[in-house]
Length: 136
Image (cartoon, rainbow, N blue to C red; front, top):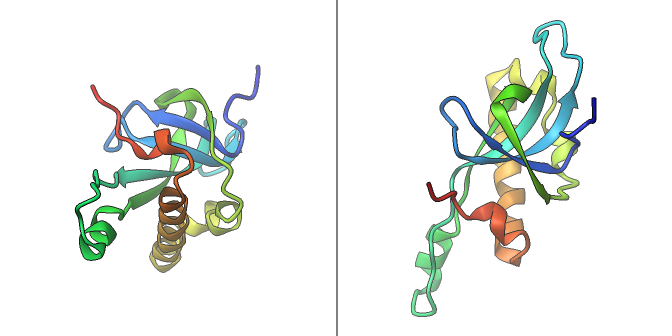
């Protein structure tokens, strides 16, 4: 079988609470693990997308509208839909791992670093498609 979900690949969640949200694969487990005996990927995604901004808005309003709410999760391959896009986030690889999910404080720290990285990427203007919500 061809490995579709490589690190950096952008996909869309099809099932569950985050259905319709875009995610980026951080780590893949094609054969599964002991805790999760099915093929899955550790992903970071956008729970709340940044809002539209205009030229008239002040710095305070721009800062509020440029915020991103991320989530990190291990998702079964059958609940993901791959896209042609990739997102190269070098900082994400070390922040989220399978041990991150065991301790709530580690999870919160990982979410904060993911949030910072995604907001930097958004404000720089790169990967515009990733930061726009799906319309369906």
